[in-house]
Length: 394
Image (cartoon, rainbow, N blue to C red; front, top):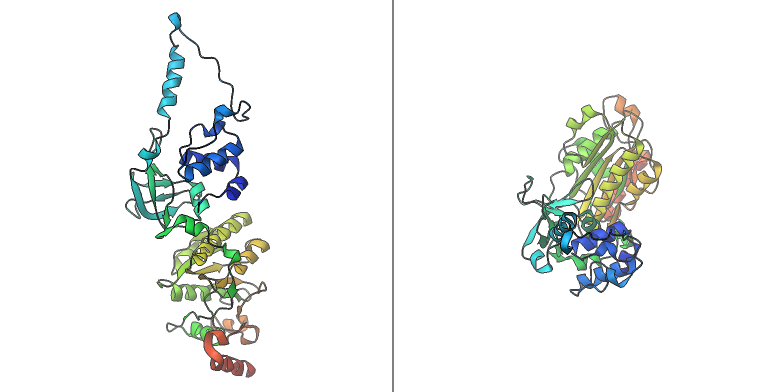
C-alpha cells in the first residue's frame, strides 16, 4: 500500500504537494492543477508515468504569462533567450534511473525546522550527509534516531547536499507498513502493569517505589508548595531512569534558571529559561511530547520528565500529561511532571510536604495526599495491602 494516499494528499496544502512532486521529479509540477498534481504524485509512486500535464489545461492559475521569445537578426535567437533556455536545461531534474543509482541507510537527525539529515559519519556533520525534507519527516513521522533507508537524488548545482528521494524502510520495516499503523490516539490503552524500578540506594525514591509505585505508562505529577523539593525529586528520578536500555528518556525544562542546567544528570531535550515566552514553552513541550508519542506508537517505552507544568498554558500542559498511557498493542509513554497542584486525571500523585522539607528531610512525601490508582497491578495484591496498611497509620 502506498505511503502517500489520496486522502492525505487532498488535505495537504499546495506548498507541500509541490515539495512532494519535486522529490518525485515530476516535470512541470508547478503548472499542474491541484487534481492533476495529486494524480501525478500517486501515479509516480506506483511506478507509472504521471497522468497530469500542464499542457492539457490552458487555464492554470499558477502559471505566469511568458514574454514572447525574441529573435536576433537573420532569425537567430537572442542572447537572453538562449541563456533562458540553457538555464532551463540545467534545472531539469535527474531521471528516476539516475536518482536510484545509490541507496543510503543510516540514522536521521531531525532539526528544529522540521527537516533532517542522514549523517554519513554520525554524530559529526559532513558534506556527505543526505538531506531529508520536512515533508518526508512529517509524512513518515520520523524522529531523531530512526534508521531509514532509501534512494538518493544527486545534488544539483545550486545544492550543497544530496537529497533522499524517498523513504523505503524505517527501522528495518517498510515505510508503507508503518504508514498503515493506527494513530497513537487510536491505540487501546490499559492501566500500567509493569513497575518502573527506581531505588538505587536513594531513600526518597525507595519511599516512592514502595508507597506510590510508578509503572510504564503512568501519568504522574509531583506536587507541592515552593521549596518542597519537587525539582530535586525529579532530578533524582532522572538519575535513576537515565542510561537504561529499555527506556527512551526525554527531559523538558520550561522555566528553568540558567544556573540549574548543570545540576541535571541528563541532557535536556528542551530547556527554556523562565524568561522565555509562554508560547515558546508550549511549543517546546509539545515537540517533545510528539516525539515520545511516536516512540510509544512504534512499540517503544518512552519516559518524559517535565519541570514544570506551571509555565505553559493550561491546554498544552494538560495535553502533555494526558498523553501518558500504556498501549496494549504497542509501547508506553510515561509522563512525570512537577506542578504546584495536581492537574486531574493522574494515575499517580506524589505530594510533597513542605513542613517536613523545612526540617531538612528533603523531599518528604505527604502520604495522605499521595497515591496510585490500581497499585495491585504494579506491586501485587500483598503490596497493595501493605500500602493501605501504612496509609491507615498516618
